[in-house]
Length: 379
Image 1 (cartoon, one colour):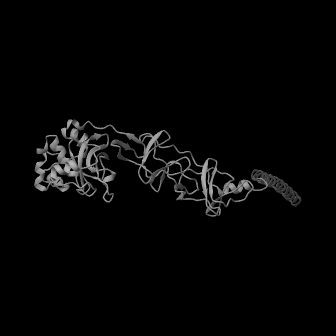
Image 2 (cartoon, rainbow, N blue to C red):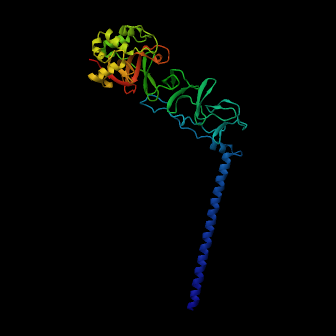
Image 3 (cartoon, rainbow, N blue to C red):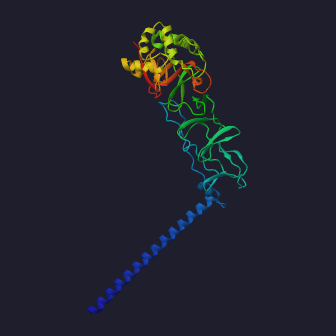
């Protein structure tokens, strides 16, 4: 009797276990079926997005992602410097510009690759196609005596942009400006120096009017100092624009003047201004170290008599020395972070080898400029 009861219990337990296994298998099969169905739906969605030809997928792979918008440079205290050429602009995905391997190409609407050389514009971006079909990328190039620069995506740069750490400007058509002069872009003024680089974080003078360019290249006109009441500066101001050093050279050296770029008359100009202002006795002690037409004479005087002063304390009538005693001029005054000077035998025509004489010009330098050796204040 006990044995029969034990057998019924075992059979009951086995039946219950079998029912649990069958139930679990059914649930598992249903879940797997739903998963496969979801996978089929996802694959169907992808097919619908790419279309029959698959061109959309190809375009997404071959064309760089759209660029984030980058603010144009404005005043230095308000905005960052312009973005570098390697980062912007980046063309948005399109079906015309495609990439194959290392190179970009232009594709017609019929799918053929353009092989003829020339410019094309796609979505507002300009590209240059070389003969054979490759788009010019990552280099500066010249077409019909005009200069262009294309970034690594082939986009020809326009406006103000950075190239290898220097700022440049190109027109809306991508033509780089290489002649000296001002340009306007995004409501700001910039000054292009001869050769194409923008003036950046420096002072400069155009037609004897002082300007300063911040670290983004934005240029503003500076106020001309009043000279701090110095009679020497008032004399020097009246000489600005004179294109020969004859007056100053003949007065000091009492010899014939040769109007060439190799005649060093900057020191004679400083001495003449002090004399014309009735203050020549303030610098005559410097003649102990050589004539006043010789720049090192001024430096040796300052060394021996302790006449060097802090640049930030410079004022009208001080003497400014450049380089390794290679040039001398007069301080007109300080405006903001700039020292404004009046110099004889200076300006672009004073470059050795130009064959042209220097002039009396107004120049501008940052107070911390490496071109400046120091400032001297005579007795």
